[in-house]
Image (tube, rainbow, N blue to C red; front, side):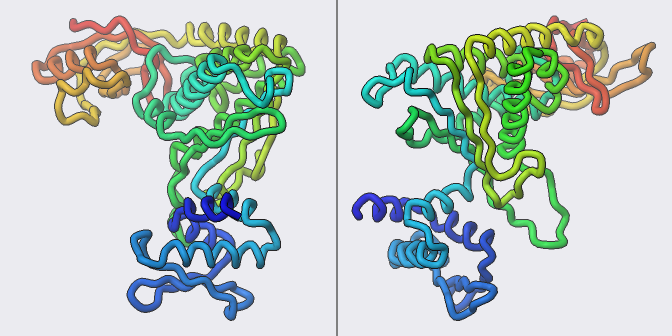
Length: 374
């Protein structure tokens, strides 16, 4: 019993409350902030939880709540604990077949490289939510921060696997209120799920064009390249992926609560790499040079010197007079050095020039390069 007790002690009070609210328990606050949860169809069954995780009896209250849920839902403690933890995360599991495993272990170098590529796939997918181009030269610092916030969970036996938990914040919207866009963390995982499903189908039909045609809602070239390398590393016939979504932000109709995809090798590598190659040339017809004055700076850094401590992109808005499109305000993402030059150009009223792929509605210049002062 030591294992389950230790796991219960690791349960977050906030996640437990979110799980109860999502599972149909009524919630009300009584004396000194104590919260009382009762079943909608049986108010005699109650769970009492303290207001904060610093309360003296928090561990005992959590233990009582979890054991009550196990009895009511007729599930064992481990299943209840997994469900409570899942409320705070979308979970990605990658499963390797037994041929990659020796005595329940995987070569350390393979495991290290596999995880590195997993991080890059997550970051590239998040970048695709922020910048819809078919590929990118430099990744958004926001996308990198998202990937770094994901948690590496327990490996699991049977077929060797890795678990990644993508955090999603609490959904505090009440019935009838305006529903904002889902957080980036959820949108990135949805994009990855749809992208993996497209990749799986494209491999079966040996049709890399399907990946290319669906990049706006799926995987960009960078994600395809890193996914191909990740699949290649363990030298196995295939890797299976499973994604389970937190129910708190709703479940996508086209995907459901849980879905499974399998990426085969070596046919899968050929299809993904060919798709990536095509995605890197798909924007030739969109290439433009934007020339104009900087009208808006969008750096999140208060101190310009701190820009050199990050590897991501900062946005500026350029007022562009084009014979083709007329006057347009075009958002451009720049690296630290170019951004500082844009700041100086803004102060001095100078014109800048930058080359990239033009996206419309909203107007953006993706993969900006060849930056210069005019």
